[in-house]
Image (cartoon, rainbow, N blue to C red; front, side, top):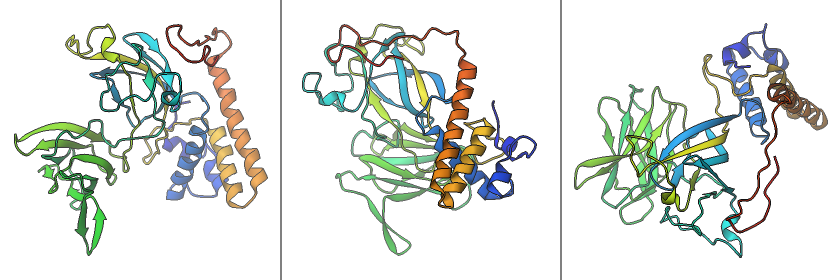
Amino acid sequence: MKATLADAKDPDQCGIAQVANVSPNDPRFTAIVNLATKNLVETGEMFWGLHARYQFCVTNGCIVWPSQIATIEAIAVCGNPIPVRNRWFEFLATYPGVQSDGDCNRRACGANQLLDRATPSTCAFADIIGVNKKIKVYADISEVADAKILLQGNDENGQWIRTFVDDEWIDGEYVAINAATPQLSTKFFSSLVGVQKPITNGNVRLYEYDTDLATQRAIAIYEPDETRPWYRKQFIPGMDGAKCCGCVGDDANTKQVEVMAKLAYVPVRNDLDWLMIGNFSALESEVQSIMKRRNNLAQEAVTWRALAVQTLRDELRHYLGRGAVNPMRMQPRNLAGAGVRTLI
């Protein structure tokens, strides 16, 4: 069921407030709903509503997934499914060897495949190119007067940037967030490796600003509730060999990529925010588990967690039904490596 935080606060629909012994208007109520949701979303199971299908236009093999995506379960380039490889694949002694990050279009024996490095690896969708670049900060909506974003990275000489703020040295540089007047960093950045921002009213956008040509290029867009942006970066060697029309204006340089993705946990803050887990019975059981664990009742916490998970498994079976024929996924014949993948 699709539900909002307001629905969870309604005692006629949900009993979380009673289980947690806290008022729905208390900030602790939202905190425990978020914690219960996070615990269930990150079990790794394919519960109902935690997967989505996305379509992207990609101009080269490097892909930075949006913050809403936790992992890619399946992918197709130009309508053709390709394998998803885990973090150990590049270290197989027989095939294909470590692929170069510096050349995202490098072919891996002529076969398209999505290579995963397992961990989030970037805070922007595009890298800074060159050493004469500063970072320009735009805001879509007016923010509080003292709103600032912390940018961390290396300067034009490759040295880690440190600045003196409020009588102490910090990593990075603070730049004001101002909708009326976009702000420019005082430091040059050759790389951006970390960003910290407050919860904002609207999106905050970063641009690489060329101080010689007075031109700029978009490198990041942060949503209002992103405070520690950090994204998963993967790449598809040999994607230029894919044959399909472009996504925009029939541009031959763009390729259509479709994925089935597992969604990442996103907390709720406002009453109209959608809950990722809309099954209140499961959420109530998980809140029970949290309360028991906080009271050092480990075995009871395990029992309530198991009940929450089983409730979501039952919900999944209800929506999937028994009519669908389950497909069998096999290793493509034209690729080296193990002969059979997982059977689903």
